[in-house]
Length: 469
Image 1 (cartoon, rainbow, N blue to C red):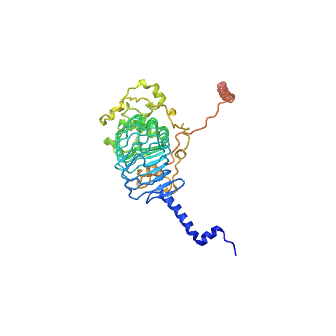
Image 2 (spheres, helix red, strand yellow; image 1 turned 60 degrees about the horizontal axis):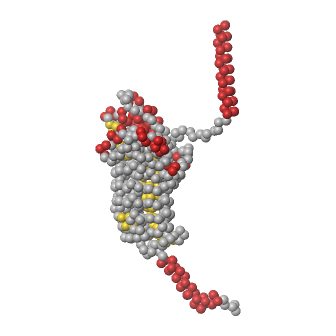
Image 3 (cartoon, rainbow, N blue to C red; image 1 turned 90 degrees about the vertical axis):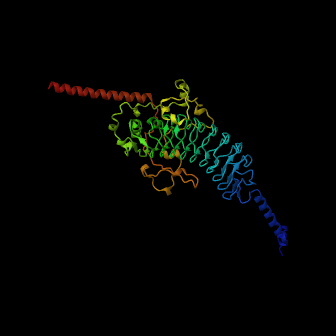
């Protein structure tokens, strides 16, 4: 008979019941730290409590939680102490939040993604709500009923790359509201009530790739509104109230590849000449620009007009007359004495502002700001710049004219891949710089000169021979 080990004896004598209780105890210990009606996963600690009609933040969320999902509940407020600073990702969209304590996220230096979207009764945020979130790279504030943004609300968010502000009620953006967002690549502002864009509205967005401002109430855009957007590839301005847009506005956008201007009441008179001039030189993809007035131009596409259509506009400014050089921030500091300070929020002064040269106190040069990443040469293709691949399920790429207006599906998380991406024509070849070697340069110049001299001498002899004969 085989001798019985102590463990075998325990199991044989009912010890397996004790072992089962121990295991159950361990399991109970694991579930104690997870809120009721939620599911928790370790490594990284994840708490999933979505769609349970919670009216408040559930109790029992582990302090070491890194990912918390609370979307599709009935939560009404966020207070300090609801979450711990170990948080990396928080989804709390589609709730009924009306108030966020400014100290809710104080000290959350690890937070990378914060989704507060679709909380329609939020309506207002304190300026310090997001202060200190130095690692935040995605901030969702769409469909929050916001009518304004307080000064400094985005201060210090140097790593933010995606900012969703669409489908609110924002009427005005003050100067330098985005000045600290030196690494922002996507800015969604469509579906608001913006009526104007000023000179320094987008100052500091030196790495912005996509700017969506369609479906607003834009009537006026300052000529230098886009002066810092050297890396912008996609600009949507369709379905606004623009009757004119000066060519200088777009002349600053050296990397632009996709432009949508349709759905505006364009006046194709002499004021449209600079835009027409810019469009005929633009080598990217653009929508039609259908004229609404004057009567003789109604229904025509501005892009199809000829120079003869502007023959009576000899005094109007065309693109080749525009000074397209954009001052850097450092240049503005050196030239600030040449301009007078001007700021206005009155809608009635809209078009008159175009004749004023406003000057806002210059911001610090981008290279001196915390979190600044020096942009590389803009010699990459559109595809490699965005690093966002289009799913094969979307089928072959279409031309801009075949694509419907971009309307994102807000029932799900927004997808950047829904934005049309057509391969544009290259604006100019980006060739490598080759070192200039003095000997080879001298030899090449000498060779060219010698060849030219021989040709001239031969021609002279032939002419002389013909004369003698």
